[in-house]
Length: 69
View 1 (tube, rainbow, N blue to C red):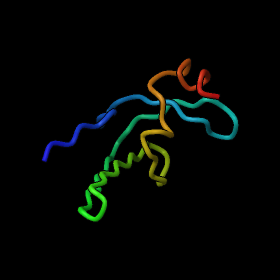
View 2: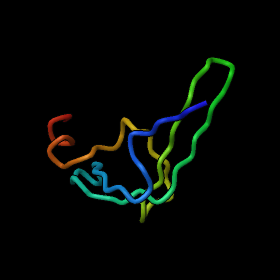
View 3: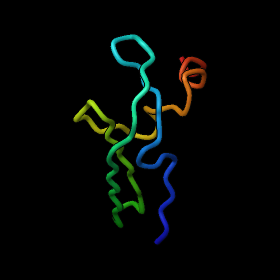
View 4: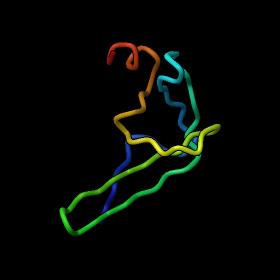
């Protein structure tokens, strides 16, 4: 099985925090693969937060984040 991720450990990403675009660094990743639905879930943790984020919640640049709103 080959799993490709959108982001890697050490990448800078953007997310909305308290209604402000905020930049974070990815420091951990967790991959969950299941044969029940052939689904693969990729979760990212960022420095300064213990919450895990889906790829769809993170953005590669501030502009991409703002364009998504």
